[in-house]
Amino acid sequence: MKLLLIGFGVVGQGLAEILQNKSAQLEQEQGFAATIVGVVTGSKGSLFHADGLDIADLLAAAQSGSLAEYPEVSGLRRGWSASEMIAAGGADVLVEVSPTNLETAQPALSICHQALEAGLHLVLANKGPVALDYANLRAKAQAKGLRLRYEATVMAGTPTMQLAEEALAGCEIRSARGILNGTTNYMLTQMEDGMSYAEALAQAQALGYAETDPSGDVEGWDAAGKVLILANALFGSSLTMADLDVSGITRISAADMAAARSAGERYKLLAQATPTGGSVKALRLPLIDPLASVAGAANAITLETDLLGDVTLIGAGAGQLETGSAILSDLLAIQRMACPM
Ligand SMILES: NC(=O)c1ccc[n+]([C@@H]2O[C@H](COP(=O)([O-])OP(=O)(O)OC[C@H]3O[C@@H](n4cnc5c(N)ncnc54)[C@H](OP(=O)(O)O)[C@@H]3O)[C@@H](O)[C@H]2O)c1
Image 1 (cartoon, rainbow, N blue to C red):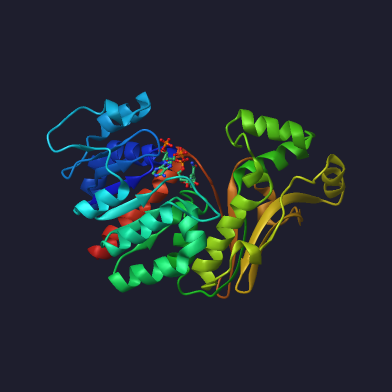
Image 2: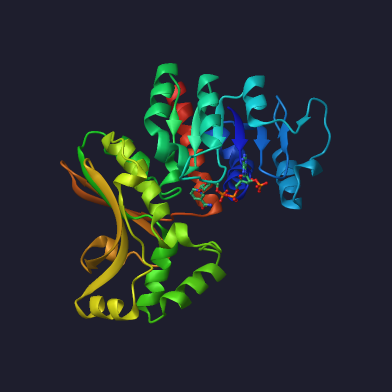
């Protein structure tokens, strides 16, 4: 399987590392072999080789700060755009791991459409295209007999989409409610232990959970992007951000936390999707709710189903290998679909 990687930061390098470390096991146990033929970054250059790039050299170049450090070899192309790599042909899957843009989904969205038109399967960790243009991407993929997979976009490698769409395929899913932003869950956990909002935010930033501009997390927009993905994928909705009721954790005070505690409840930033809408809100949950016990930077989701009742999944919602693992599982699923046992 030949891969084009759009983006080669935390997640792209995580995937490369996993492919490097597990190649023998994946080939032996699952007959899976993947080659990275192209890598595009925003500012560190790009590389393409129709026969595949050497992963160790690629990682070393990326870690040195510039893909210009990749050794010269015959047939290597430097500086090509994603469009040029797609047009060159030969790749099977476009892996979109560039930054998420929840306003326009660009430039990734145009590249995703180009890739599908050229006959490439699509695997995304980038939430933008799936949150904002799922229906068109899905229709284009189906018309071409291609796969559109996006496990990494919700709860990283914790298999939310595969649980909902594959393991629970025989169930009707009535709602999805979850803790889909690890930064805010970490902050709320710290605030429960007595920290102020400002102290919890400073600690989340020091640990690398929160960005310098934390608004996407603390105002609920990152979780809202995931609500749109769940609503699109599980309920066939065509909701936009404007249809969601979104608020974050910025107004929760120490007094609010204390009031919840004395009532036997806990604040969680709850992301919810139903067939008719979606929201992201800080709500008080009773301690018996499985989501109430999810602490720190973990994520969790409860799917309400007709046949099984509530099914709750708890796990990592971010991280280099955690997110790389979601992409690997999507690639393995594409291979299984192409060559069913
Ligand atoms: N990190 C996680 O735990 C996680 C979990 C789930 C989903 N995601 C999603 O996965 C995606 C990648 O996350 P990340 O943590 O790997 O981000 P990152 O470390 O910031 O890496 C982003 C990569 O994209 C490149 N890039 C920037 N603009 C580009 C453009 N216009 N065209 C092509 N490449 C471009 C960057 O290159 P330069 O460095 O040269 O700008 C960098 O290589 C994001 O959409 C994120 O929301 C991440």
